Length: 71
Image 1 (cartoon, rainbow, N blue to C red):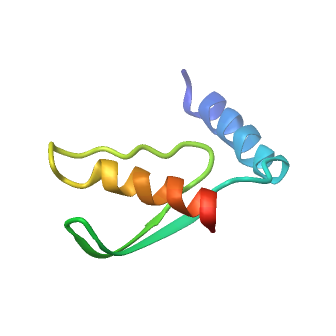
Image 2: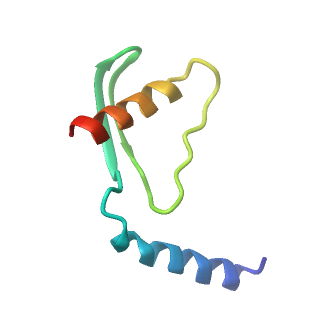
């Protein structure tokens, strides 16, 4: 895929952000499991949570689910 085509698709995806009402932009975690203080920004339209085993990926996802459910 050429750079120009990729940039065009990326801009189209970014433009769709306004149509998603329930988009999580940021989560802040304090004193949860092994995380003392962490803020994660989610850049629309693609966010990947990746890391080695036991690095806190599931904790970040748990915090996202909690924030989405309870604000």
